[in-house]
Amino acid sequence: DYITVEDEIDSIKSYITILNMRYDNQIKVDYQIEESVKKEKILKLLLQPLVENAVHHGLNGEEGTVSIKAFSQDDEIIFIVSDDGVGMSEDRVEAILHGKNITGKSGFGLHSLIQRIRLLYEIENPIIIQSEIGNGTEIIVTVKKMKGENYILVDDEKLERILIHKGYSWEENGFRIVGEAASGKEALEYMAYHHVDIVVTDINMPVMDGLEFSEKLLEKYPKCKVVIVTGFREFEYA
Image (cartoon, rainbow, N blue to C red; front, side, top):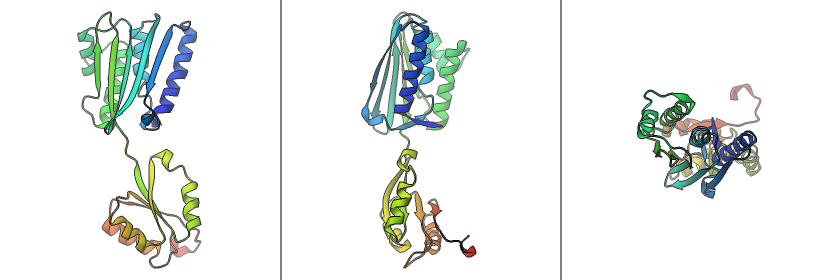
């Protein structure tokens, strides 16, 4: 599952609120989230294990501050979660990073997160842990920005194109509208100069209908996905 950075931070804030009821408001959190990354989608619960580690093992139930930073760097998002708590030894850091002789929920949680990031984002070493006994811990996580898919709407009626675009939360689900066309022929001409991942098309159109268009489209662009939207009831279109 995926979630926006903004929603992930909101979940963390709720989590901290609950913890502060238990720890008598001893946990202070400094949020520094770059505006440009707030709507980016990331793996759900990406930050939770980092904050849990900072609170339960870094601060160890004592008063302290956790800092959460997020910013964009080229095609990546960098997260930095740090605390001013008890810190970890070099051996402990190595054990967590390489999954060796891990004990305790913290170690398992962090190592599991590393495995999840490796699997999804294909980054071999996604986490850097910098820590020193008595001087806190800083964990840096790097993930790739999730690339949305480009789609075009193909329908000879402008109103239908508007309704299709407005009828679904395309952008919120990682899709970008990059063009429109009033026929299959016009769409193919557009695609000759633009990258398109998904085509949403009607069937009954002038010049080149949706079925002929879909056939020609998949011959030329076999990896492109086609979604046919129509109000026809005739059996031959099923």
